[in-house]
Length: 297
Image 1: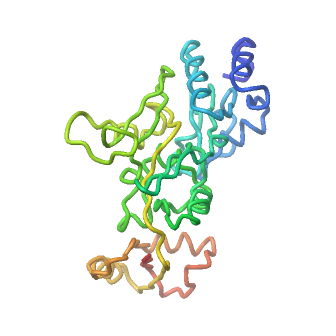
Image 2: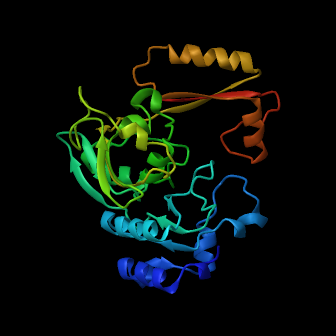
């Protein structure tokens, strides 16, 4: 399928919903939104690009785009930061790519309930910069932290480097507003309200909409858990000559009783060689070093 495969009427309807500036058909916009860090063959990018890319700003616009796509049976692929390694944001069947980067607003900060409600396109680093003045953080810390977006974290059910202390994305998202494939907007969460963390009755649908790579819907808002900002942060890397010794040390560190321990990560020999190949600054260079254990507190 090519851009020309979408009828002029569909393109015109999308422009009516979003405005002409936010309906993109040029090659650079489409190709740039087909790229991910995974080792996808460069010569095959033109086989897996969207027919058109749209940049909504509100949940209502996302809903209208999805309703239109549903009516015409056009595939829809949501895209956040595109930092994942699973090709989940690649539009392998063409169609409409919904880029959520303009949906980057903080909608509510509630220090009493320790929550923040955001749109899915907000950058993780930017979010915590804004929260700094309130003495709190959203403690989700992926390896792609400076460039990942909240919506992408939800779509992939992301693992956090400091999850041992605070939990991972699945634990830290309290509730979400989701646009279903029909265009209907629904609320899902842990409890009976946007900021309620627990419920003893009824179905809890939140986990169904975590980590599905956009196949069940598009997150349009999310309410996240906040914690007090630590007074200090500490990271250390320990080098080992063999895997067994490094592996045993991870257990010792995890059981150390350190209350502020946020995470322990083991880099095996293959990972160290991979990082050494790229001359990463934090990996020591001596060849006798085979494994590294990273500790965050």
